[in-house]
Length: 79
Image (cartoon, one colour):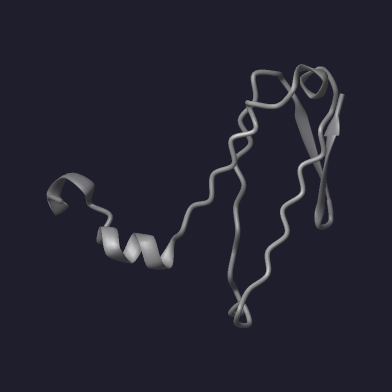
């Protein structure tokens, strides 16, 4: 990779080990689920304690216009 182009100072190997991405494609659900609200919950079990200050981000992409509201550690949809 040309560092002048990427300018991220992160090698592909570092990106793989330090910044893993998890992608869940739920577009292949049955038609019955597509017309209703679907709760998505992600639970993770780690072999070691997660270091303090670790952050996780979620990007939700949808073809419907939704508004999310945070209530502490939970997110809800506002219609």
